[in-house]
Length: 231
Image (cartoon, rainbow, N blue to C red; front, side):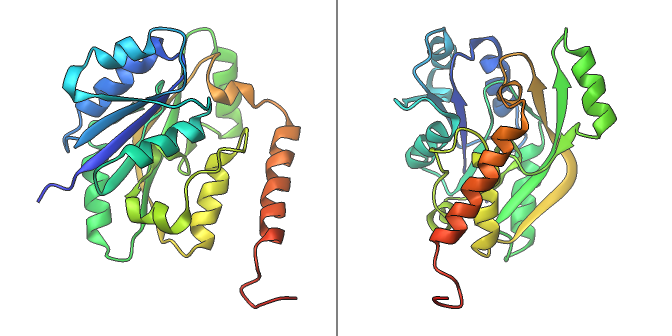
């Protein structure tokens, strides 16, 4: 039996790469049940690109301009039991969904299937590419684009925190782990993450942003009741 996957693509002014992202979804060996492009008030041709796919793509408008709010809007709009995300400038390996659906099916206790994301760079960023290689930062697993999970997991863990300017992915994965979700990553590179001047990774350059995220996580922990009761 084919299990339906809702593929959610947040976009803000991403017309240059959005078509490639959608094509990589539609080229999956496990065909998506629906593709939802969530537009965050783009002022370029992103909506026109998505609309050009006709019935293959559904466009949802989200007023609040952040990837987290767009993903949440996509989750709310999704009609199928499995959820996957792809940013508008990234790409999936053709077998990503097939391998991850099989991964989830192979273990009754598995809640989140991850895979490996590998960075690739647009021309002109060769020095940054060398720097990432020297630091061993060319691959990652805990990113929304590597995730396949169920709607039920979001019911249990909660939606993504759209108040965080950065680090919403890290915060959600920490929350999923703390909620008792079973998380496992396949060793395969099934996602390619595009590095270019407008990508969010280039908007997070300094230590202060990471410290802000750490502070937010600590504050959240302090606000939550202890599992052992009041202290």
